Amino acid sequence: MNLVELAQRIKLRRLDQRLTIEEVAVRAGLTRSWLSKVENFRVTPSLPALGKIANALEVSVSDLVAGLDERPKFVVIRGDARQVVQRDQSPKNKSIYESLAHSPMDRTMDPFLITIPGGVSREQALAHEGEEFLFVQSGSVQFEYDGELVSLRNGDSLYFDATIPHRLINSNKRPAQVLCVFSRRSHESS
Image (cartoon, rainbow, N blue to C red; front, top):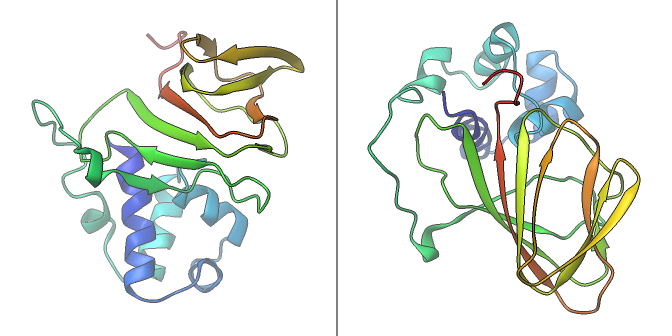
């Protein structure tokens, strides 16, 4: 199932109804921060939680997940059709995440183009399930992994276990662009 698309559908449904995250969270009996993580694909809701979200949005669970398990042969995302995905709610992190494969598709990888303005980093290193691949397309960044810092510059790439806390830091004045591909399957499950 395309879980990124599910997160986007929840957010779009909420925005179409002109509801705040707080309003939907109260209706669903969930916390605002947890619902925000669902919408930003930081947390995948359980089936009971998805039911609560669907009720709060006055839609059926089946409508929310309809077609998410269909698998097209391939997905083309044109450069002008990328969707910006909010991955970090920190007001200090102004990084822009553009989904490079946001159309419905059963996939094990999610590619993003991350634009990190100068002087920006996530406040703290975070972990998530799966593995991740980074490729610095322009500029340079520091990569923090379990407290260790590695400098990366244009053309460098990195592959790692994403269950260990990690983050990108751009302490330079110029922005950097990083291609990020993460898998939802960890190496233990393959």
